[in-house]
View 1: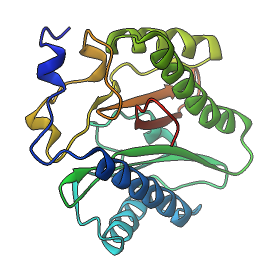
View 2 (view 1 turned 180 degrees about the horizontal axis):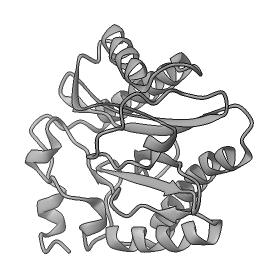
View 3 (view 1 turned 90 degrees about the vertical axis):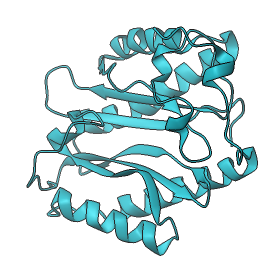
View 4 (view 1 turned 30 degrees about the horizontal axis):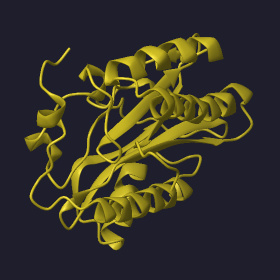
Length: 226
């Protein structure tokens, strides 16, 4: 666990602006959904990533603090740093997620969500419960001011209660005026204080206990819905 203080890890850069961060959040989530709508069965994952880059460029989100991630089927089990298996094609009944981290002007965005094509019940439930779990963890943060570590301890227990396994290697991070890594490059799950609103991204990645797929959801921790 990190021993750095809350003051150190929640520093902001010279250009930090909460309203601009929220604006980029809105733009990022809109771009994410546009990318998802462009994904169709029969498409290769690599082609979906290329389409994602085109969409971001068309929206003026020319730079990213991390690359475009579109994961199909078994690649939805991969953590952020792990490369996808190449040549995976989206099937008629399948699951995928989109994870983007664009920079607009001086401010970072980050958004991730899971999408399902077809009628596979387990996949639809997995998608649903990734968001359910995010909402439960966020509610506990709002109600009880849990530490970063406490949030992920709670998330792990709740995931098991829902019938899924939580991937603790996907464990949240700072967000800021670019680049947040100059302020803190570690994980949310490592901090020993309650994260402040508007500065941290809560990431939830779950997997089916037997089948080879999972789901992902992330968003900025905010003290009210927006």
